[in-house]
Image: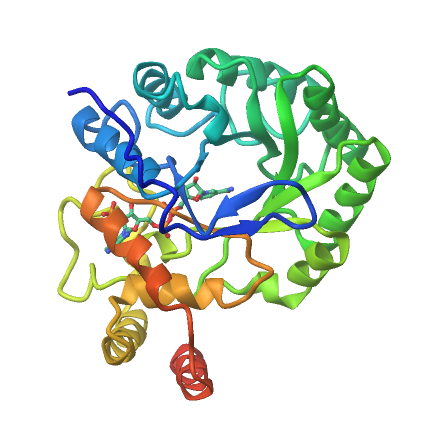
Length: 331
Ligand SMILES: NC(=O)c1ccc[n+]([C@@H]2O[C@H](COP(=O)([O-])OP(=O)(O)OC[C@H]3O[C@@H](n4cnc5c(N)ncnc54)[C@H](OP(=O)(O)O)[C@@H]3O)[C@@H](O)[C@H]2O)c1
């Protein structure tokens, strides 16, 4: 099937400035960690990318190791880019990362200059692009000097292989140091990518303040807690869900009676707002203007549509916010 992007693609999406940079990101971005690998169905993931772009989603997030097998999400996305987006590269913000295990031996993991720059070259090749828009250090490396890791990010920009750099999973104190180093090297940190959802809130204890103070954007990953914060698991574990699939990263052991109780209560509240639970959960993250974008995953176009419709209502009353907090502190 051939694809023609919708002419109306910019009419509904809202864009937020990423920190104090020149870049604006869609309020919802699409991540290709799951559902875009060699094990997944091409016709499905192709439709998801098409629909995302038609809805104004300009930002697609990858990493060297996304698949499975590792690397296959970049290869598959590269094929879609070549076939359907060759005229639209300048409308896209494509990110990739290196920091987790990618190849054998001592140079295929963590944060050395050797690993990061070799990995970026491999990512560019797999995707068939000359540059990525954002190159991330995927996680802090306790055994490599931060200067070396940040120096490698700067080098990627100086070599023309990335336009901007970012960090992911860095705690507030290390993020502050990384931001300082990047600033001094003339390649300021564009963005931080932390895990952030109603269930995972560490960023509220300092990181968001550090980012705001330094004019760095924030893109929240796993906003739906990998699908937990939806109605998906209320009646058991579907075989085709992330928790049901062999290669899914969500452990079925995470779905405890206490968690299900919280999800049920959140679902009831979402209904009173005329939203699905996924929509309420996404809206709740976007209520904070320090969040530049919410980075969702989707295994179908229907899920993507459901999530994008969250943008129709980002407002919460004080009572609703309090009610959410009460639900979340219950065991
Ligand atoms: N920097 C990092 O270390 C890091 C780590 C993890 C992720 N990320 C990035 O963040 C992106 C998103 O992460 P994520 O996939 O964990 O995000 P998520 O949005 O929390 O979870 C996505 C999953 O939730 C389910 N889902 C989505 N929308 C739904 C809906 N409306 N109703 C019911 N279920 C729905 C789907 O699961 P089913 O497959 O079960 O249908 C989908 O695959 C990744 O693709 C990646 O780009 C970054």
